[in-house]
Image (cartoon, rainbow, N blue to C red; front, top):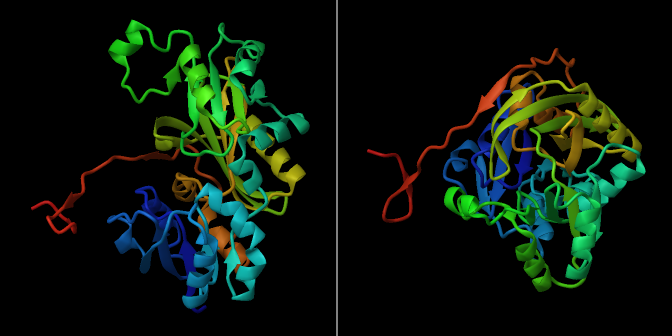
Length: 353
């Protein structure tokens, strides 16, 4: 089969290196075009072409991608940034007209709106954190008490933010002397009065999601769906997390979590690569907290364990039959380590000598 051209967005982070690896050395060969608003010197040589683009929030961004796909005869477009998903889904027929198939689904609504996601969980009678949606400081304390504060910590989230942006954990002792002494100033913890002051500054029509804070371990499910049917799924326990990116994870099956995902996908008719994030409650039950309607940052661990869902989605979009699904190797682990990048006086990345 002739080589196919695949464009993947968001190629500005180190974790994209192993995602790109998932697409290499397979039966179907891809010419990979990586695009990013902030080019990463480690990712550039891994792509066949690398193009700097504006941020995904810039006016005309989706039309720029359309033009790139047309000029480079792109067969498959895989977005990896949350706020790209719905705009690309709405324009998927425009891309199809130029011969590009977009990996975007209506699930993007639940990935880009945390309130819509928790409300859908409630509608489907699936487990979810206790929550309230507020718009003002006046609503804050009554809502907080209704979900357990101050006996329990609570979490405040902006509906449309990702990567730990727009998230704070509210607890009574957030600025005790112990916190001052032992926590870095980048801590997500705030006290009630500080958060109330923050609410005073927000736009009046911006909703804030208050949820009970679940103190357990984080767990994620990556899956590949075919219009409401789960083709395959993996679960992983996230042991070490840094700025929302798992730095150490292990494949671990949790039947309850997988079942919740299957029900959600079936009832909503979701398609493509979907990721669910969970936190275990005090009784050990997995509680879903977020959905990602895209490839997740640790999809490579699933591939290492036998389920190469990034590559398989590429095959699906091209209309190519998937290979037999192998036995998943639970217990496989990923550990990420950081290393320095040196730049010369001209701004070029150079190896240390």
